[in-house]
Image 1 (cartoon, rainbow, N blue to C red):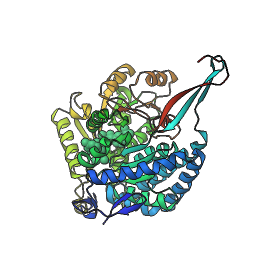
Image 2 (image 1 turned 90 degrees about the vertical axis):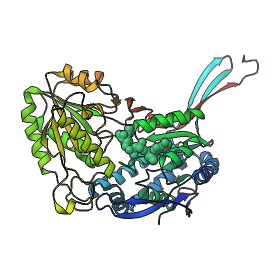
Image 3 (image 1 turned 90 degrees about the horizontal axis):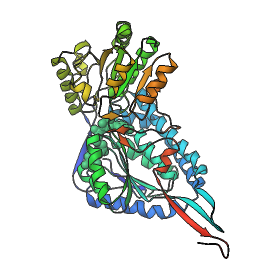
Image 4 (image 1 turned 120 degrees about the vertical axis):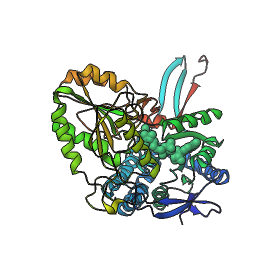
Length: 482
Ligand code: NAD
């Protein structure tokens, strides 16, 4: 039985528990406690106490501690990848990648510990200068979803900890196990007790109690737009800072001068990685009519080669969807598109293989020219379904790409610098990739516009979201004006 990690140790909780289910077999892997306000309070108080000494530790030393702790996590990569696949469903290869990315992000921010700095403004008045201080905020609540349970946690932990804050994380109720083990490993690797705590439980109870807690100064949230709005409203009650990384419906534009092989490969990886459950997955594809047939042929050849199966099996490309509910939603979205006249080019059903009858499997699916009002065009499609539209030119592609409430990522495939520059200017998104797939770099700020949220993760910019800026005026000389 797994327990919550509070104040540097696992804490036994009484009361109700929640089963963690393997999406490939529907077997219960373990159970976790459902935290209520009391457990949340315990975790936040531990984090608050730890904040006093962690924030006073020199930033470079915080970085060194974080580096060593991250390396300790890395030594357990295989074990963690296995645990992630069991609770999340993704292929082992992707789990390994995810754990590696988690460690890399921590290492990246550990290095930045030596670069935290504020500002100095001379001669504000005669004999008077100003300082711009950057100070840690206090306890940060990190609330993350189930699609990338560890990298999305790392994106918050790295900048929050190196800036001197302490963290209470609440993973999704369905993927708490790897996060709990990581908390233990970070502690073993030298992170002081209470600096990083993990509570388990459901959003409306444990999550809301965490957001409302008076000692929580900042909420870093990744999840759906709907819940993001709720968190923003709750945080307003305590005038707390929030970073919201929400849903997306990323468009990919394939022009007639694109490298079609590379674009088809990117569309396949971009859509079907993590069984399509990625915030920056390619969720709408617009291809120039003149090359559509050629492009689709290449894309479909790749899609046919994708192997669906349990994530623990070697050679599998697509694991199951994470939840039954998730699969049902995808099925309804596909049905709606077909009812409104879309053409089914691949998939569109559960696999028939007898061994895949348990688990939440779904075949990689490609739809052609769905109605622009259909659900796959207007909603986020969080599964292995790629809707493709044929367009006349870049103007039409850009207009349709921007016709979405979301604005997270976007991409364009072209050999023309002019087209690429135009798209980078006009696509309403926080990220535009030119001739590349949806890879996120620690060096570049990441975050959405429109209903995809606000605030940045990654990059130097992320640090600003975990620090207060304070001005100090110093009247240094006798007789200086003040
Ligand atoms: P979700 O919003 O349902 O849940 C996310 C987290 O919030 C979970 O830990 C959940 O328990 C918690 N939560 C739910 N209700 C809450 C409440 N009332 N108060 C406090 N916490 C609450 O999201 P999901 O379905 O688990 O995740 C999928 C969504 O996340 C998709 O929309 C996806 O695009 C988005 N996402 C965005 C990014 C990004 O960086 N922008 C990255 C990954 C996923």
